Amino acid sequence: MTQEEFLHIYRFMKSRYGIDLSRKKEIVEGRLENYMRANGFHSYSEYMNVVESDITGRYERELVNILTTNHTYFMREFEHFDFLRGKVLPQLREKEAARKDLCIWCGAASTGQEPYMLAMLLKDYFGFEHNKWDTKILATDISTDALAQATEGRYDKSQIESLPEHWKRRFLRPLQDGRYEVTKEIKDEIMFRQFNLMDVFPFKRKMHIVFLRNVMIYFDKDTKNRLIQKVYDVMEPGGYLFVGRTETIDRCSVPLELIQPSIFRK
Ligand SMILES: C[S@@+](CC[C@H](N)C(=O)[O-])C[C@H]1O[C@@H](n2cnc3c(N)ncnc32)[C@H](O)[C@@H]1O
Image (cartoon, rainbow, N blue to C red; front, side, top):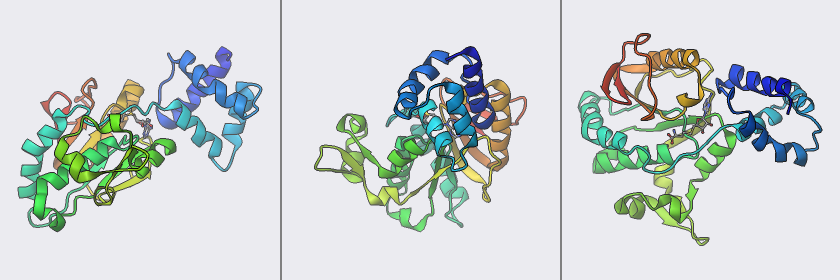
């Protein structure tokens, strides 16, 4: 891959998806190599011409699937879920007692572990009262491969091991092939959609809870600031934003209150 070819891919991913691959030439090359060979491309320039001229969007979709990092796992940064149960949900239960309607958005849902955990927590927290509440979760991501896995909701035994026993018993069912599938009851609580965080936010309702964890690490400072402004605008006053533990946000641009590292309130 020549430097020029790399810059072409870098600019494409940055301008459309915000993903900054400037220091990832080897990773980009390593991930695209087999794909190029299997699809009969002779050079990266030829390939990028096809990506940019293909009106079906198939090649662009596949490029995004290859170049995004979808690493996630159940129980990741579990303190956020503890905080939800201990502080956020009791507040919202009281505040929204009349409407019984919560808007929850998971903006980098990847292969589904994060939104499924949210759904499990909500079921568990509201108990018998859950069916009186509308707590549907909107779970979005840019990767169609990740979303397909998320929608399927099937995980290896090793992937679900860390979940609390009572959640495993209640919300997962064993399959004949040794894997486990999230129950329909939990799947029905989530709407999975493809959505690019760089796009205009189309949401009609304000969000009570936003999870945007471990995605801003791929964006540069300006992209992050623009994104946080849009997130702020769609949050309900008093709503909570959760970001990854290693991520920071610039609170000079938005008046979010820092509740504890990686947890913010509008
Ligand atoms: C490392 S995963 C994080 C998953 C999960 N939130 C967690 O913390 O475990 C990052 C996800 O962000 C998604 N992503 C990257 N850029 C995006 C964009 N512009 N719009 C939407 N999703 C994006 C990737 O496809 C990937 O699934």
